[in-house]
Image 1 (cartoon, rainbow, N blue to C red):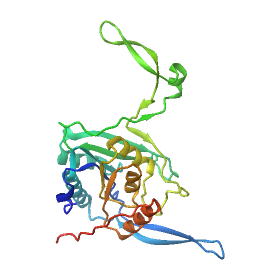
Image 2 (cartoon, rainbow, N blue to C red):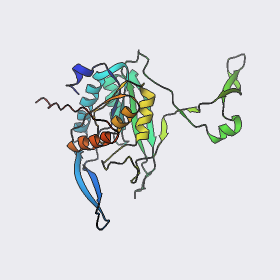
Image 3 (tube, rainbow, N blue to C red):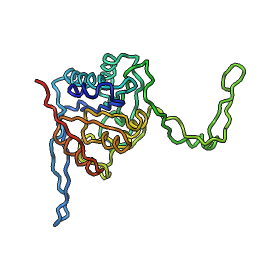
Image 4 (spheres, helix red, strand yellow):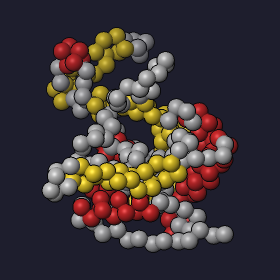
Length: 284
């Protein structure tokens, strides 16, 4: 990230960071192959990334250095989205407030999903947290309003046409009326119900912690325009790059793991894309 400052500083419209989640263990990519003679499915593991830390402080320090470096690359209208889980989201919020300034905080997005329940005497954890910060609060950030389908009750009452507020003399809304213009739906809120990557999904790569393309598509469509530059400093399985390039954006991904580079190259090649790879050795 530091090496890219000279080339990309001020050019990135969206930086999406999906770091390790402080799980305290090593993660592997699962390779599956089918024996042509027996038909049995064989599984092989390849190291993906190490998420073991000496302390929470060490984890947050490593995260802070990357957030700071990514922030320097943002365009004035750009934004950064940090994807964490509830275990560290509150620490990450304070960390980002210190780096960006509290006035740059834009939204907290809760990604709710369903997964196989675990045995625990607690409420099931079924969500992640995405913290969005803008680079410059004095500049209008890139943002495209997205919509979700109208609620069945709204559709039953008002149909599929836009509503218009009817106000009284005080300026307060007294009732609503409908127009002839079709409704685009309800403006997208900050709680997103999207499925995780299913075990049999075509987009699954076997890389651990892989995020669904639908999640990245929503972020990229909302926070960038075609031709804008998207940055992912924790590239992983290459989901951000694959979606961004498919949507007509430019994309730069970085990762310390060889397996991440391997699976991303395979994924982009399947889309007919040959990535430009430039390796920069870290300064000692």
